Image (cartoon, rainbow, N blue to C red; front, side, top):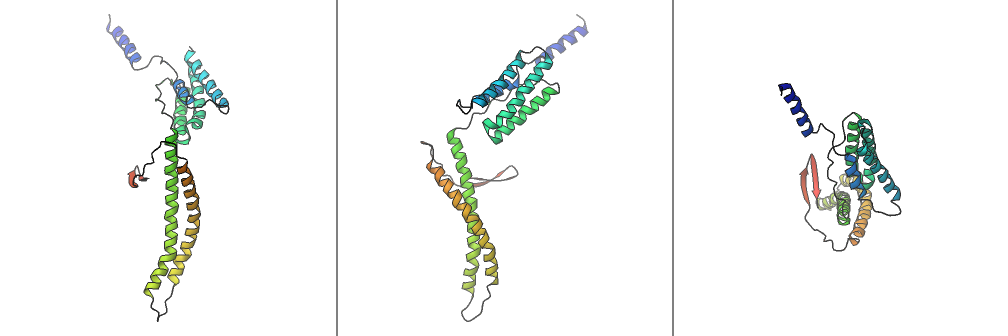
Length: 235
């Protein structure tokens, strides 16, 4: 066997090992199946399920196709269909991430790169308890922020007058321009924050009353931590 034949044979073996051959399936297949499993079967979800079935049919057609161009086109169509459906199933944050990844794979397929890669394992859908806890934290954050601004407004309307009354003698004339000026700023802050405080506190109270049975409410202490390029308040 000549040296050139050995080189060619070795190249073919290495090419198959690193994936230069035809991969096994379209990435959209597993992505669509994972998202469809999170859609409840109800009368209102029939139209969405039909869209999932159409996208799944396109992904299966891509896997059955023998022509490379047709296989890439059908797989890209299935990925784009999944990108439109992901935000409706997973919510805004995760759905946009999944849609962006699917569109990148579809763009790669349209440029001649096979989108036959191993997809990430689908993350489990959040449980009702996790959704309840996430909303509780959001409501607590809004209530605390409104409470802080309300306290600032109250302090600006009361503290200057208390200081003025403590430092002013009965026989002397005291000018209260500073107290009037600070109160003029504190009153709008108080009015603008006490209304949201009442709204958020009411929503938080109702949400706590709707706590899922058996869910223990964690009463940890608030912590202010560095997170990335900013600060994060955990409570």
